[in-house]
Length: 240
Image (cartoon, rainbow, N blue to C red):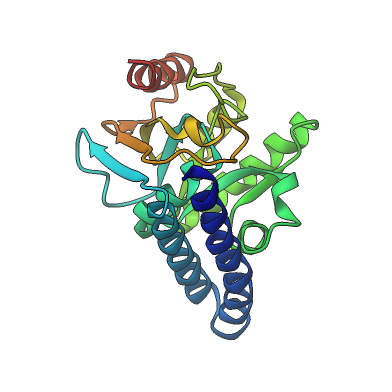
């Protein structure tokens, strides 16, 4: 059943991306940022409904209530493409933007449009100095607007469920440019199973867990130990 259901999933998924590419364009150019953001939220709601065709279940767990005021830096491990729609939908009230690789900024209906026009930042990982400069201006902008950010410090997806070592430079830059933001570590489990066979066929009945840990204030005098603490907190849950 995984083959026909995977085909059905991709038919629905692809149709949504094409449809909402146009919806986003109209929303942004007619009504502005707020309308475009709401269209992205709605797109990701429907993507989650598409995942239910595969029997996918998504569970959100919270150690404590999320911060209610100001910017939040959500720091998560990264296991598959399908980490992102649940995070966008669940965190829609936070106007969460992404630190994205530049390759995602073109060629993907809806996704590329949102990355280019929805407030995220695109970086070239082959140009680290330029990337940090972009993240710096990105952090300043988010701090002014009280918007939030989702960052995957591993730099690439883990296809086995084993966490890769965090790259700290981007985090350090965000901490310095968003000093009043709260940090929320996020542990993602079981999403890697989507990519285990290169996304086809898709697994059936997969259950994904998103655990939001207690928020942490930024201590500019303890940046290195703070990053170690975040990484250890996420890894302990992911590889339990």
